[in-house]
Length: 505
Image 1: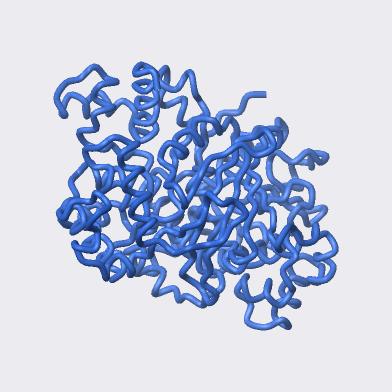
Image 2: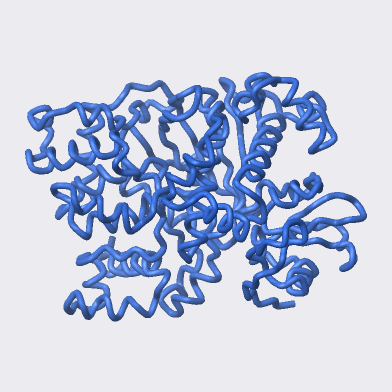
């Protein structure tokens, strides 16, 4: 059965606010057909069992009159439903925000998720995304069906459940990592939400991996062109920081990751492989990063564009995407890192930019031990680069003007004037980038394309795009690209790949 998704505003029975849900009849038809396009777009709570599921769950389909539909897993749990143990609703892929309101709500949600262990205030959250508290609550309710506070509580419970069942972290450390102030509160919250104590959930744990590492799943909507995604990342991989390598016959992306937020900052490694059969990424996380597991997984979802609906993008791009409908927009785990790489890549080839980045990290990065000798450096922090002077770059091929641009970028990020982790308003972020020395429109748009996962980014004057489209003025190129809005960043990727194929690379 083919079901066509048409967003609708459906009243929320709990508080009469409006949620961004498909109509109930469409939801039920998608449930009947197990349509994967709706996975993560809504969740179904079954009144007769008190359980909620993803629309792709293979359990027996409930009767229509027993179903309640929710915009998010957090909304279902807030209404008193418990997660299905078979389809694991907390693993469902997210939604890619297109309109401004959805982007703000999603940015606020990611800001919350990266700070689950902290007691961040609503005022700080609203200030960060640049709107009033009242407007943020309204946007949040429309996108997720719950308040920001209820969303945070739901994510804390889901993270605790994942750490208890997918890692061997001690229960006390799990409680702290998930943001619970005491074991008593932790035990009571899990028992109320899931009907199980931490000890009972821990019985399903796989036990500790090598050196205490844990393995997580990140689900996605197929298709996902893992080969194209890892090829893109591999060509730009900074030696010492990241690599794409063969691991037991499959392509694996590895890198060193540095977390600075939260009560337990850490540095460690991650390794990611694709399981196409189950439509999920398998993520191995070093023990040192487990206290920040929520932030790690949030950053990886952005890096691999797991909120993307490939059918929606391919439909909008038409013939351009016909050959590779699963192409994703490579994001970032560190916006400052992408900013530095963009500056180093100005007017040089990808290979030359990679060489400069490798020298930059070799001189200024932090040494880290990993299971792989090729991975041994963490990318320097903004504050570390901000303290440098132009003469510190002597001997690594970075000219003084470019060195000054890197230091200015680092000072803006370290001082809080610039947020490159994709959680600040796009227009404001772009303006602040353009105000920095050495950063023009192409660099600003490329940074937003990667660091902010901006699906409509169009790096102005990009040579590869101009060549792939047969040349012409910038105005003519913009006019031709307008047909692919709001997915122009995906169009850029397809055009880059087309040009590389023509060049024989």
